[in-house]
Length: 101
Image (cartoon, rainbow, N blue to C red; front, side, top):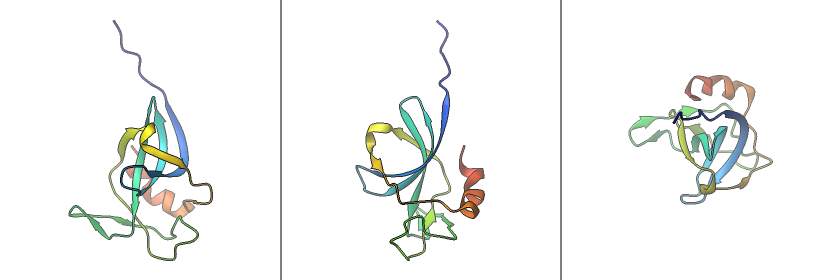
């Protein structure tokens, strides 16, 4: 039996992870999973240097924001509702493009 490759649907949204409450920049959906980059205030996570964002995606937060440099995949059910007022700046999208694979 041949396995059908699932289609990747592009996304551009922010959601919070239900388990750890951390925000995530979701850039694609494949089947029942989201592909995302974690967003944090920390310069280093688990010994890995994070990417500094030019503008914090949360309009209510003035602290410096960072994106984790490795894309992750998790089930759609592990995320809360979409944060509608959050937005990734164009310059930050350009910076993160190479990590969104």
